[in-house]
Image: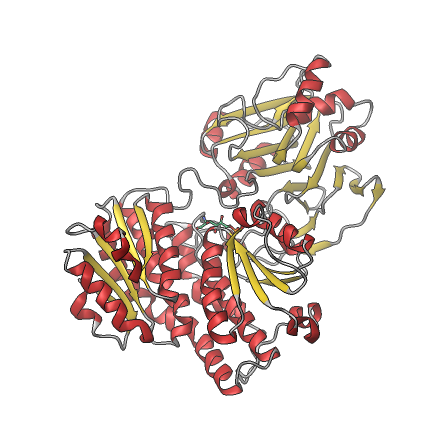
Length: 611
Ligand code: M6R
């Protein structure tokens, strides 16, 4: 994933472009560049590495130009070198383009353009765009863009600026997000609203196939050659949402936001008397007849969102006795999944732009299944294409490591489960009331316990930071959360971590247990407690260092662990929402002790919009 910014107006463009790039740095940060029109000529600056290096390179020389484009890159085609940085230009430096996505037929286009005499200087797929525009340009950049995108296969959000058309930006979108911010006499283009809310809250979200022209006459949008109107939406995010609010890292800020966003995700979705789940989106999308005919649920997602799906499988099967398959989107899309009109598919994605999850959604619909999307980003590609969307309302999640999005995904998956139980008349009123009451109380319980959990996990992290390996174990729902705990530790602290179903260890992995090795043992499921404790004892006998996580009533954990966090009691079924919090904090502090770049771990991007 990469980040795009464009500006046309009356202020100096350079600082606005750099700010827009900083706000989108989480989208990719292995190189960055800008192109600004100065005195009718394009000035292009590139830098490998983080945006701060580009800013340093530009220094005080911000120039006078009031129109320009910028890009922060996460390499796909071509290594992160200066030649491969965007913006890319045509042969004569008259047209500059920034692009997000992948042009699948770029090799074919490149060969054709080379035969027409164009000289390429990078290995990127993007570079075909400025050359194509140069080749097709006659008198109008918009027309050249229309003709160019007609020849592209793949996904793109792109913005072009040209010295031929000096008061104009031209943009196109297909399968990659792009928005226009509308200010007073000025316009902003960006991959992400966060890049422009500092300047305007009026935003137009471009749709697939749109080509937009922004100039001194305003905005013109066409789709398949026909003028179209796209509504302007007012974005009411506060500016604080895109900043760290006093925390050293976005990840820590986002962990602390969890009680608030959990409450927000429930707002309006649980009746005041805690008797009913209200999901009008589901009422509108699916008839009783359809829901009664559903013979299985299929949950498809990637990474942390996939782990949320694993929790949902267990809770849905336990409560509704409806079979649930959970699949990794990159596997599902190519294995000819067995879904048809009787399957209900749930895709889970924070960004709503993950390429594999989007492809899984399309594959499911192609096979006749209806798709529910659980998304955080409004109007994202997945949200738009699903038959029904349930938004998580976690707000902008900036840290690459997902935390608040995960807990809100869990909340919503639980609410969806209860909703189905209620609509299909499987859950009794009393039990539903009990579960909703427990769910409703969770945000306050977590908020109250957060300081203690944080203090203890910081101590644990000091121990773990010196190890190369760590293990996470649990049974049932605890195992699903253990997988998420191991992913968090790996992705931000670079400590190798594995999660195992506790009963499975003795089938091989226990051979890896050496004296002192840290094991994080989750034991919240009462009906599995004795079994879990036996597994912990097996590890203790081999001198593993055990950190336990259990409910406050399970004091027996003190005897078998080297330290235990006791969480506020809730229904076992809902345990994952609360047990993940110490695991997130443990990963955070381990990474902090090791001096890692927590918000932007190496080799990762916030949203993976390529296969
Ligand atoms: O935006 P999505 O939820 O579709 O993203 C899926 C994964 O890429 C994401 O959860 C990833 O695993 C995170 N880095 C985990 O912290």
